[in-house]
Every structure is written in C-alpha cells, then in structure tokens.
Length: 319
RNA sequence: GCCGAGGUGGCAGAGGCGGUCAACGCACCCGUCUGAAAAACGGGCUAUGUCGGUUCGAUUCCGACCCUCGGCA
Image 1 (cartoon, rainbow, N blue to C red):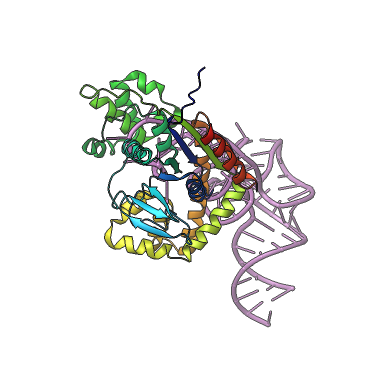
Image 2 (cartoon, rainbow, N blue to C red):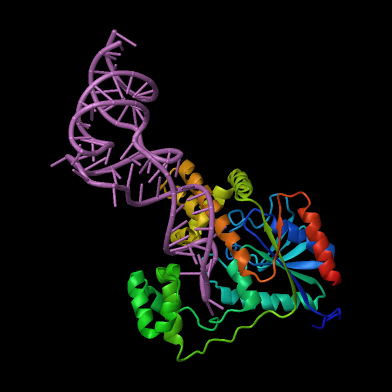
C-alpha cells in the first residue's frame, strides 16, 4: 500500500447528516479555516425562491444571492438557485454539476466541501450511478403511472425476469421505482448503461447526528422560528406563480403549508402533521449513514463534537 | 342529586345482533434506495375502565362500582 504524499493529491470534504444538525454552519466554519468553497447537495435548495422552507441559511447570516450560488458570511456556496421552480432535476444532473463545480474550485486552489442532506446525491457522486445515461421518458412515465404496482411488476418480469426477482419487497411494491426500472429496460437496446465512475481522490466523509429526541426537539423549535419569520408568506408568494401540485410534490414545509393555504386543513393541524413528517424525514436521512463506505460520525449534542471534527479535518488536510 | 350518552392500543377512532375479534389514520420504532429521493415504498408496535354474574365460551349479554361528556336541577 503506497501512500500518495504529494500535495497535489486532490482532497474533498463531505459533510452529511439529517436536517437540523448544523451542516451548513459547520461547512462555513471549515471553509473559512481552510480557504474552501461549498457545494450544496440538496434536492430542494437547488430551487430559486425556496429559501426559508428549505432552510438554506440561518436568519442571522449575511447573504449575497446570485444565480447558481450564494455568498454566505463570506463563503461561496454553490448549488443554490440553479433551477427555477417546477424545473426538473435529478441525481445524474447533480453529479455533472458537482463535478464541474469541483473542478472550478480546484482550479482556484480552494478546498471543496460537499455538504447536504440528500444522501442519494452524495452517494451517486461518490460511487457513481450505473443508469445515469438513461433519461427520463415522461411519456412512458405518464402512461405507466396508471398501472398498479402489481401490473408494473408483471411487465418488468416479462422484460427482465432477473431484474424483477432481484428487487426487494419494498421496491416490488413501489410504483415509482418500478416505472424507473421499466424505463431503463425499454431504452436498453439503444443506450447502454454507463460504467460506474467512482470519485477519485482523497475524501473525508463526516456524518453529523444525534439522538432522535434531540433532533426532533431542535427541528420543532426551528420550525416555529421559521413560521414566525416568513415561512408562510414564502409559500403564499410561490402559490402566486407556481402550480400548487408542484409544491405538494416537494413534501414537508411546502406540502403542508400549501394544504393549509388551500384551506384543506387547519393551520394547527398542518403544523402538527408537518412536525411528524420532519421527524420521519430525520429518521430516513439517518439511514443513509450506512450507505457511505468510510464515514466518521459525530454526535452534535456533545459539546466537544465541533472541536473533534476540526481536529480531524486539520489532520486530513495535513495528511 | 336526577336523566341521557359513553368508557377500545401513546393519541384519535371503526366494526362486530357471543365463537381464537379488532380496521383505518396519526405518533413512535425499524428498514429499502443506482436519472423524481424533503420523493416513493416495505415491515413493526401496544388495547376492549374496575369487580362480579350468565355461558362450553364475553370485547360483545346482565348487575354493581369508578370515571368522562351533555342536559335537567
């Protein structure tokens, strides 16, 4: 095993964790310390005008907004506002964006820090996405969306019995995943799947977490703070220009406050349900920790956590 | 005090004219994940107020008690 000791060996810091663990603040801190720039890996923060609901930054941050990036407390964060509301996005597109941005950051001799809560994006970027060449076929999707999961499964089994059998119990009943699988099968003759491209270079993956109770409490508090600081009016503004169904499809804040604004539910109920869904989201986000090969997990409820992470990053930079 | 209604899992709430009862939703817990991922999906969890009676058998019938909610006083 030979170590690369040259300083040109590219380095990347990844920070992953569920919502409310302070990923962005930590990233900003690290960026300042090591002359870095941030790439956001978040499937909702990509959208312009979705700021409070997606929790792009703290209320007391100094921000300067640009298309495609923000400058927050003096640190550049790439990946905010790269899409207009209702535009499509995907993990494949994220990979391209992240690669491009990473190169750019390297050229300017800065340290790239990938931070976000969308585990799927980070995993895809780090370890590749096999079917990344096969695009969405919206016509096919809309016809297939009329079928039940069982029907979809039968179709898949006809096209590719092996693939169908290899699915787990969850995916076998998941229409969305089945439709995607069919989409891949249908386009196979034309497009061959790409070979998996793993990220090459030195990566340090930091995971941020805490107990469920701790995170739930923090998330509730933060939600109330945002409700008191314009979250509802952000949704109202969006409703004027955007199809409400799109907002519903985003989930969480945008879904529940849209339901409230549309008069489908009382505000109190909406907030209650939203809290529950945020909790469930936190649980799901935690599941991704096991998807990352080498991850250093820190409990943010411990006072020493930030210091330990800083030390760990210092060592990583020094090598 | 009287009359009426009712007491089902952590919450909410349905059915069952006596037969291993026990839905759905929420919460909570666990999990899946290769171009929608804050999405979509899989699994799990705990119950019939108390005490007696009738019966082969009671959550379901009867009685007492306790409690809750209405109305009358």
